[in-house]
Image 1 (cartoon, rainbow, N blue to C red):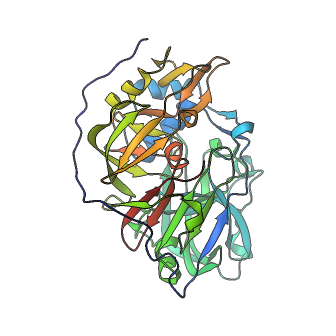
Image 2: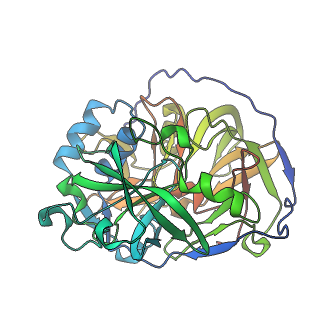
Image 3: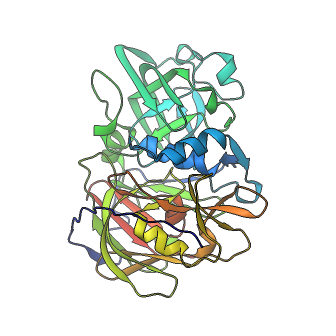
Length: 399
């Protein structure tokens, strides 16, 4: 097979790690609730477009070949058999209105489609109309703007309104109302915006960054954390304020989080491919519930595809592809001192690029400052986002 690799400088950062069975799972008092994934997705972005989106999301320079591939192979592909794999949408109440927002652990904005948008880009979406909310108030002089992959983006005004997620309501929560938005968002009519679950310092409101829903809500929760139990091809769940012991099958291993860059950033201690030897190496990573890929250093990705007959780096698609009929190997990521988190090979498919060729869900992070542990990995694990303890927890679960 034809594979390529080049040198990569890896910044090695080591954290102390530990494992416990569970923290105090059900402390008395406070709010706790569960959100079930209830909005199926009929399509998802093509491989090149989704991969370019990840680069743009992290303000990273994408390889030239990927940019060209996304321009040629843009748009969306149908995913009826895996309709819950694309993004996690939840019904969120803003004032008296309900919209479907994507839960994103790697952003810190709460923004939504609004009645200020022209019909040419908003048709089919549920629109938030501040004038219909008795609790909305315009933040005069405040603006926001976000750029995504494939030359798409959104911007607009800033309001305060009551926001209810599950059983928790935050009054005067910052809501970023879209007044301009790329036409590329229109086809995804089930997604009406984003609820960011990252840290406040990456909020995009100016002239002053705003406090996120999660930061405002954490003091009201039974425990200041949320969990993600995403699943392959089935509806997943988020819990807020508690850990459901029935959702994981063994102890939770915790690693510290470095939130200086606004992300749930942690360090893995190595990897293994299929039944191969575990390779110790520090992999500085971000846990991202809205990116579908596992983006890793080039040598690791090349080693993975070297195990797949017929796999190549496909310049026409800006990423690694493989013959769809060939089974994929498992991938293991080291977490903490002893936990080995295994992603089944069957999870490593992203999408078809032709009737016989598939785009892999593990791709290189060439040009990024860190690796990205997206939903292809997170769907294989039970994950705890501990805001109070600034740590991430990983545990095996029934797949």
